[in-house]
Image (cartoon, rainbow, N blue to C red; front, side, top):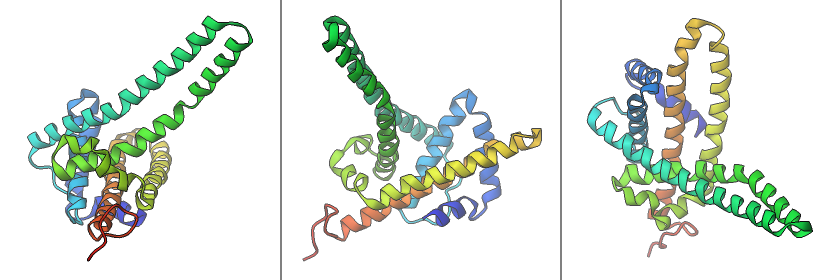
Length: 231
């Protein structure tokens, strides 16, 4: 999976594609270019699941923008709601501890501190779920599919998807090292957005491949994936 993901961005007529993606990444501070990039990454998910081995081209820019907007809203929905609920829960615990006072209040306060420290796992869960949600949307074209628990559950619980989430962390570490090296010089700093775009495409390829693999197992009725055994 890692080898396929890393080689994927430079397949086909890759130079122009990387240039466009890097320029958009450089201009992402203007927001809209960054949204277009996300739209392209969702298209990578879609074409990967459909079986394409070469990255899609930057065409249908209006569709890329709309897809990017929807993808952004899906990511925000997955991120904001859990964060808000968790933050409210922590504040309620702290408030309860302050109202009770004494040893009991102190204990409740300690519980609140532990909950606050447990915020990282919440973010990791969000990071884990969002790619699957975006892929479900990319494949179906239906926003509701991104929040369909029954559809997402087999993928989220599969070992292939778990590995696909770990592999991008490896890629991100490699990109961090490359970015740090490039940032030493002005010329290298200019190259950073292009390297980052390459990494993003590789990562989304891996997410799409994991989703496709799990979908194939479900369609084949492999036990333990949620599909029906073939008759």
